[in-house]
Length: 154
Image (cartoon, rainbow, N blue to C red; front, side, top):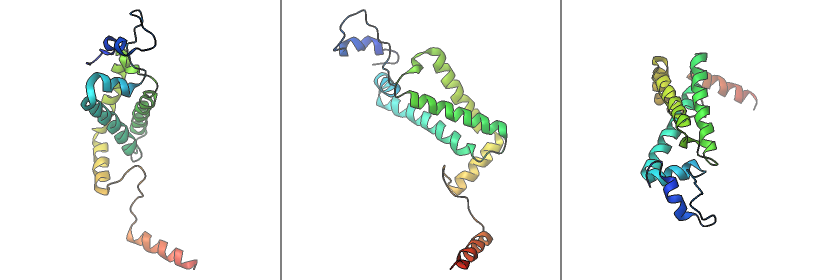
C-alpha cells in the first residue's frame, strides 16, 4: 500500500468500528505494518537487516577485550532486540524520532564492527566458523591431558 499509507486503507478493513472519525495510523504490530506497507520483499530486507545486526553484535561481543567496545556492542544488540520483541505488540517506528534513533543505533553498531580490532576478531571467527555457542578449539596437548584424566577414573 506504500510507505506511511496504512491509515488510508484501514477504513476499508474496519469491520467493527465504522466511521471516518477513526484514524488508525499504523498496525499495532511492527511486522504486519512493515509487510503491509512495503511488501514481502521489503519485509524480508528489513528482517535481514535487523536480524543480521542483532546476530553480528551478539556474536562478536563475546570475543572483544575492550570494555568500551563490549559495552557499546552489547548495548546496540540489546536495544535492537528490545525493539524486535516490542514489535510483536506495537509499531513504534511510525514515529519519526524513534525511527531516527533506531537507524542511529544500527549505524553505530555498523561503525563499531568496522573497528580494526573487531575486523581481526571477525576474520578469526569466520576461520573457526564459530557461532554463539561454539566451543573453543583445544590444542593437542590439552586433548591428551583430558584423555589421560578421563582414563584415570576407569
